[in-house]
Image 1 (tube, rainbow, N blue to C red):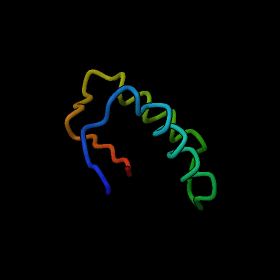
Image 2 (tube, helix red, strand yellow):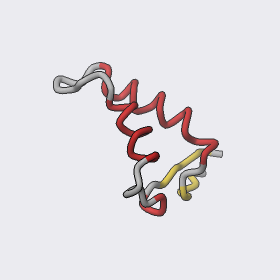
Image 3 (tube, helix red, strand yellow):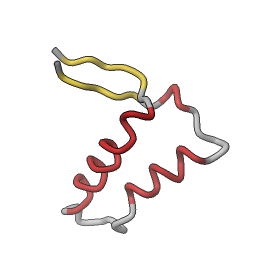
Image 4 (cartoon, helix red, strand yellow):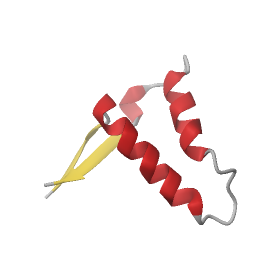
Length: 57
């Protein structure tokens, strides 16, 4: 079963790894996309309700 929910701080490390892996073989990337996610979370403009996480049970 797939659960869709709001992202929590417990998800941050896994999301970092997923983003890093997703862009490793991308034709167009800077190699720091995962760090951009971290910076966006720390910004004053970050609106956490638009970020969702999912997990399978």
